[in-house]
Length: 179
Image (cartoon, rainbow, N blue to C red; front, side, top):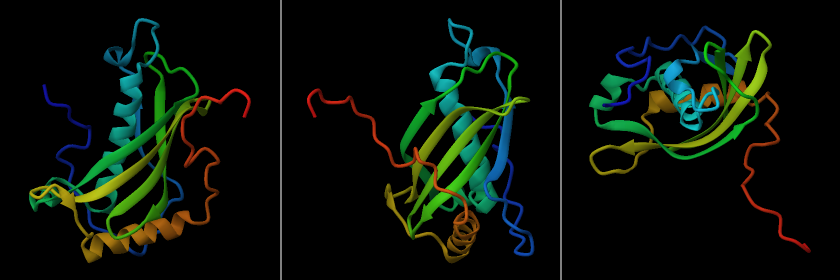
């Protein structure tokens, strides 16, 4: 069975330069499904990544990456994800995600997600991701087309006033005794 997102088939709706870009973006919400829960009756590890992936897919469509774009031979690949699980989510909990763009260059996008549980708005999880623009045929990175680069630059500029999360850029390590 192929994994799909709730945004599959939804096309890019053009870019309206007259509208302010939200900082951060909030493009995805969902409700925890039975199949997302584990033997502890909490949302499973893989479901956190699924929700963040759906949030990313909504983000891609926001700036112009959709099925038509991928049919042209270009796409976005995730090359690294770091998830922090902070609170439990259970069956029926409403969730919403925000996205902050930390950096953009000609081939990469560095983003962070925050997942919140409504109605208490408790921060459930965070994810940091590095995304690459790729030529699907060659499997190699590719420079963003001008119009996509302009949109990403505008989003990055709108998000530049946000505080960078103190957890972004951290690595996982066990403390070394005696050091």
